Structures are given as structure tokens and as C-alpha cells.
Image 1 (cartoon, rainbow, N blue to C red):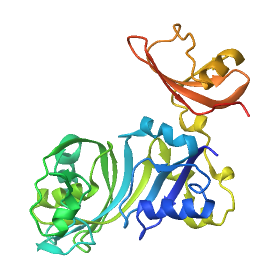
Image 2: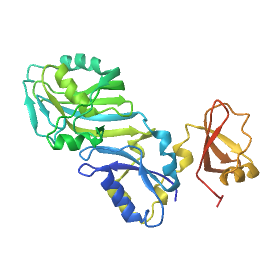
Image 3: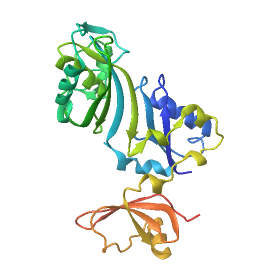
Image 4: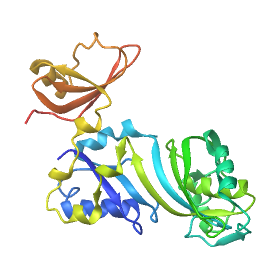
Length: 298
């Protein structure tokens, strides 16, 4: 059982709790297989959580740092210790004087490559400890600004000055903290702000429309019909079609002649079978890095 499971994570559960439920229900670890993820979501966030099952976990490295898309609700007028609705109030300020025009002008500061300070309550390491551990203990957290890219942000809902909650659509690079955008947008508007709702709609080149609700997944007795095959998950890589002999060699750890192919990352398949056998990275010095998925053609 190898493939990718696209989950529509509900709010109120951590990503690890979701994976544990799936692992326990389908006996994945008990059967000697692995389950991993392509990037976590905060417990109060919903949306696309990409899980890899079996030998597909070997392919997660090809999605590291992948671009993301989010739908975010931001509440103006109050900052919190966590930069989201779960934290305690840190500061409050007026927001009733703000308009849609003010927000749209401020959003221009959050496009392109920007420097962003992650939230104190984050999983980043500070002097060997997780930042959120230090923050929870009331200790000072000093995180350096990080470079992230905002490909686009759009104001999708604004009812100022009636309501302080605005809604954004955000396309960004991996590693971007939407909580930090909320916090910093408040500052750019001369007030305070925090993230009050978040939904991820794209990750690892997948879309939320492909995902299954967690309860629907747990209603199944087997995962096979829900898994996205590895070859489809990596369809953005060009395929190399091998003959049966070379396919056997690849599957059993032997090198084959790929000198006709330019340096890049490729899917390896047999000419008479669409199943993904391996992924090969051809370096500029012609060395090969092969990640095997199949060891037989059954």
C-alpha cells in the first residue's frame, strides 16, 4: 500500500492527531508501514493535509518547501500572545476608522519577497528549545526575520467599519506564517490584529478539491481506493520509460545508462506499466540519486 492521502483536516485536531487516527484505524504502523506528512497545520486551522503512506513517504522530500495557498480571516483591533484566537490579549486598539481602501493599500506591503518574524509560539528552535516552550514559560523569545515570498494576496471580504474581521486569499512560499502576516498587517494599519480563522486550500501541488473529509476516510475499511498513486503525485516530473531489463535493474539497486537525459529529476516507469518504480535525480556531474519505490512488478 503506497500512495498519497489528501485529507481535509477539521479544526480542533493537530496534524499528528489526525495521522494517529488514520494510522490506528487502518493498522498502518502495525503492518510495518510508514505514514508521514507534507507539512503540518495548526490545530485550529482546517484544510489540506497531505499524508504519504508506505514507500510514498520516501517521496515527501520532493515537496519540501512547496508553495501554499490559504484563506485567512483576520480580526483587527486586538493582538494576542499567539498571534491567533487561541492566545491571551496582548494589546487592543481602535479599528472603526479603517476602510477597505486602507486595507488594500496596506496589503501592497505584503507582496513579493518580504522579511517576516515568526510567531513566538512556533516550532522553531531557539537555543536548542522549541520557541513555543519558551513562550509558554514566559521566557523571552528572540526569532530572527526570515525571507518568505508572497505571490499574491487578495481582500475577499471586508465590512469595515461595521465588523473588524476581514478575509484574505494568500498564495505564498513554504515556511510563511499567516499568523505573522495578520500581526504585521495590524501594525501596518496603525492598530493591532490576530488571525481568527485559517484554511489551507493548496499544498504540495495538490488542491483541497482532491481531499477527503477525515470522517469519510474513517468510514472506510481500506485505504486503497482513497490513495493517490505515486506516479500521479509526481506527474510534474518527466517520465523515463525503461524496458523490462532496465526496470528490473533499477528496482534491485543496479545502475542503468541514462546518459541520454539532461540533469533533472525524473520518474522511472516501465514501458508496459504506468506504476512508478523510482525517482532518479541526475546531477550535473552525471551522478545518480535513485529513490526506489517498487522492488518488484507485482
